[in-house]
Length: 150
Image 1: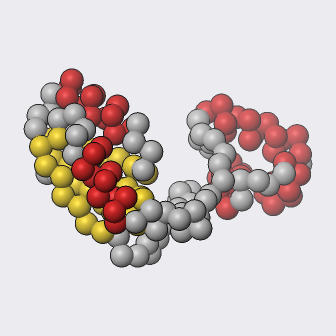
Image 2: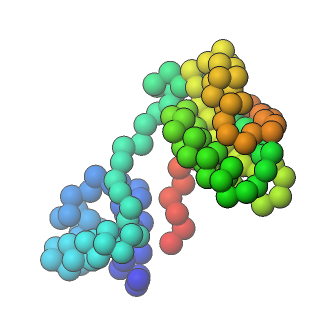
């Protein structure tokens, strides 16, 4: 990956809907080499997809919490079952396995506190292998959806 590839990635992180022509102009290369580089970046996995950035508040999802999960056991079967089950919960925006205690950090979004409580009681607390859940409410997002540093 060279500087031109990094410029292509930076431009697409800012605006994934750029036309190929606009992208080529912004990175100052002709259309054909830009197209080849873009396809190579997609094939290599550097570009994993394209999507629309949605505004959670505009969609009525105004309650966000971080949930810390401590597991009963760390054997492969328990971990796999938990990870498959948590991946199937649409309100879990991120799930990260951590070193140390707790074992996982979940970023969860819902309409409001009652919806979060229902999700917590009916889905999160019943995930396979969960020993303990602890949550904290997000007051404000300071940095969000930042482009990757190139």
